[in-house]
Length: 119
Figure: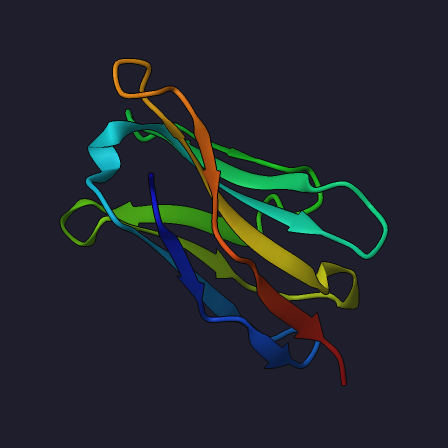
């Protein structure tokens, strides 16, 4: 069972920045991908950004050029740097990982962290 602990959410003004962190309970080399999703009230979760074990990144269209996903292998942590935040970025952000097949191939989720962009 993988434990994911997110931190870094909060209240920020439009145009501001936040950095989210997601610390995993095991080596990130056990994961095919590490991802950030967000969820608006009453909506399904949407992919914000992902990073593969090989370092390839992918972003949702609405955050391209503003958000950056990265990871620290030594700390088993993935980050989401969010710049030029907009009110429409307000959501609960979730970290998610997909374990490699030789372990269980399962997807695991963090508990979520609230990001609120408001003046």
